[in-house]
Length: 263
Ligand SMILES: [Zn+2]
Figure 1 (cartoon, rainbow, N blue to C red):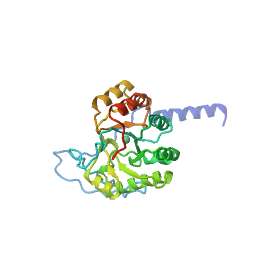
Figure 2 (cartoon, protein in one colour; figure 1 turned 90 degrees about the vertical axis):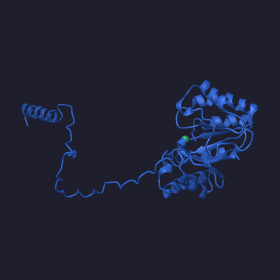
Figure 3 (spheres, rainbow, N blue to C red; figure 1 turned 60 degrees about the horizontal axis):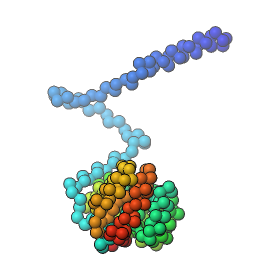
Figure 4 (cartoon, rainbow, N blue to C red; figure 1 turned 180 degrees about the horizontal axis):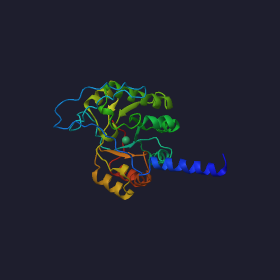
């Protein structure tokens, strides 16, 4: 091709391509919606065969109960306050909170996400080595886990326990906490079958929403009393404010109520 011919060809191609999406709009897909007045049913057309890429139909989620099921642990089990840290382990924040707890000579409960435990086994081992309690917090922080079939719940909790035990063999995993606190009675049955006690909370400063440290402190200190279980997060986002709040909260709560192990 001579240069001029080539140029003409290229120009033609550009016009052709531009013409395809020239309006910048996606053409509306026309779907036949049966209207209320449409009386006669259209003759059935052959159903498209499912292609190999079609995923299997998802099981329906069971509805969430209107109120939380009975049997959740929301108290520390003694006059002291219990601290719980969710969604870790996290390489930025878990070591920080461990150092704070160590310095105060107190322990807490860590609600671990399976995927995180698999990624950071050394942190799981350190949590156990430093005497803290363990809580299963599902494999991937599935807020709908309690609404799934019992077999799926069981598989999720067992998988999470397995990675925790791979990192810290024989460490007792006493608790399970449903992500988001969206519990169902069915899930409690599964947890109990696996020897996991359902752990809720009584004080929630909503630190996941990144309030300033001052606000986290006020929220905890105004709600806490003897036997409280405090929910906070050492992972799942920027936890700088939680870490700062704990520098004040840990000594304060220890002095006022004592910080205890969950029972
Ligand atoms: Zn969580």
